[in-house]
Length: 462
Image (cartoon, rainbow, N blue to C red):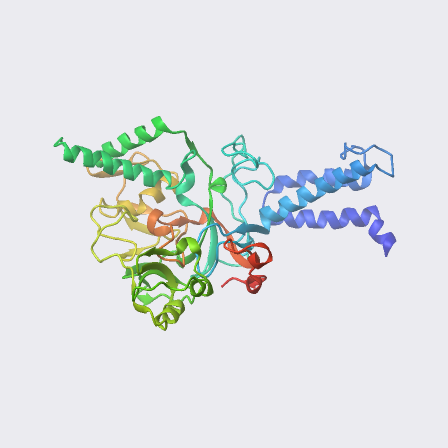
């Protein structure tokens, strides 16, 4: 058996089969040019591919062996990370209590099919910034590949926990990335308009204020663009799939007219009032409420709570009332689609439908805010409005057919999540993979071994 495993023809055949299967999966038949290289590595050995080794020397030095092992490990880990599975850390509380800050998890890329990287020339294991630097790019844009998704095990389903590239992260304000560039743009546009109103000047068009804001931001900051695969990674729950109709009333989501399936660990912000005494901090620890989320003003607390935690707090003798925070119906907030004709907010919005690949919709000035970014930014069309006429790629357009599928993603921590309510639809080419299981969980409010949340290790994500 050992002789077979050491046989050069066995090694070559095994490697060749794996290589051909990978080539068929990727669908790039130019890779067939690599077969002669494999043949030379294992059989003919005419070219000295492992240049760091001394040719003809059977026993290499310890340094060479280490180099050999590191190169193999980097190549293997890069392939695994690119096509199969990738580690991810939960940095914010937007998915609590389903996923906690400090959860370390694996994201399955084969669940929906991995995507070919847009920027293949990049530093190993770095996302968009070189390790040890703040703003230095970890990738080169000399080669940019178009979007292509390989075959996977299935499609995104409602209530899947999905990792994706931040849709509003294509343009960033260097050193001031939060809030995102487009939120800053809207904010400054509003300030310029408000200034004209206060000073009694003639009001300009929305485009004029946006241009003023864009010029102001770029004159005071460095503005960069990022390719899709180098935009920040976000993790949320898929609430709506292509073609679904969504409606939210007082925080309750309706999907195609039906109440959203119950999510046990979903939470909202509540106002908790006591009889004047304080809630024992140990009780809040038992409820797993992070210290930074405990906002107190006198005898009134603002706390993020699940339904279960609400019931537990109600049993406390010094708690006199628990009221869920709610943005009132008809009160406008800065939420998608950012139209002054809609008085929508984080708890009350819709109905609207999610774009589906191949679907054709009528276009007009009223519904254009829903599809503007889809048409222009995600599907790379030239979009303009002149004299109340919509133009796509220079031609008048009364309809549009979508080229991709889109999704609506929301955090389980509904009042503390930046999600689709604030930047709209998530395109299919931004989807990275499905959150599969937690392999480690550390509580930032604890120390030493008590930091480890043993009950969450190797826990599957639902």
